[in-house]
Image 1 (cartoon, one colour):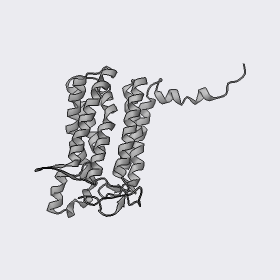
Image 2 (tube, helix red, strand yellow):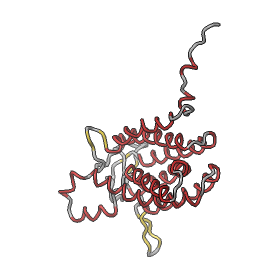
Image 3 (cartoon, rainbow, N blue to C red):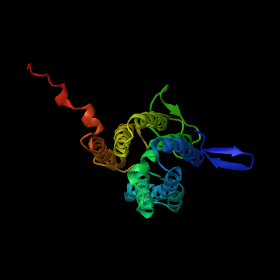
Image 4 (cartoon, rainbow, N blue to C red):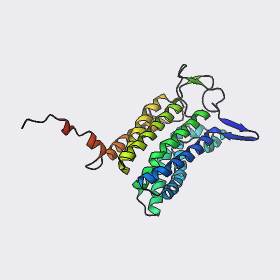
Amino acid sequence: MYPLIHLGPITLGTYGLMICLGVALAALALIPVCRRLGQSTQDALFMAVYALVAAAVGSKLLYLFTVLPQLPDYTGEQWAGLLSGGWVFYGGLLGAVGGAVLYCRQFHLDTLALVEPVVVVLPLGHAIGRVGCFMAGCCYGCPCPPPWGITLRNSFIAPNDIPLFPVQLAEAAALLLLFAALVLFTRRHSHPQRTLGLYVTIYAMARFFLEMLRYDADRGVWLGLSTSQWISLALIPLGIALLCRGESGFLRKKLNFADWAPKKNQ
């Protein structure tokens, strides 16, 4: 839509600008969440820095994996483009987990407890980043007639002059709803494993279905499913397991079918 913003002699890429804005807003939201959950804001912010660095590495590595079959045919210009583009969220998420664990092990902190407030604000920053995807035209959706389809005119990545479904905005909306759900959930159930499980389960389910509306080629398709869909399928049972963990697990309480059975007359 607007891949570049010109401010006099300064030209800014909207994708990078929205990523920075997303990180800033998530960091601001992290402060009250940490206070409410009784965690150190300073440790959470420093851990987030570790996670962001590791996320950048992980997202790039997973992108390289998805385009591995095409790499031998890449031109010099395409190889140069790999340095500036090509970031896969799931790769970043896996890398961020490694960065968070590294920080907590280095300073002898409870990883799950400190990760909980970061998980709560993560969808907020991710949602702003997806708006950046829409502005830049990356991660674009499938052809779709108006009014749902939006025609891009000056994208460097997505097909121009073809109405495309704004799947980036759909994911941004889903992420904002997930952020609100996590805030409400942690107000009533402060439990790191369940919070992480709720995030993983809902996002993996949403991402699996949203991938069906994607149209960009560099996603790595294996047996009819994209790389992100395969990862989603692996994460959904993991998220459910975290929700059910322990005798007092959240889902175990809510889905206790034995309590629903009719009682015999005494």
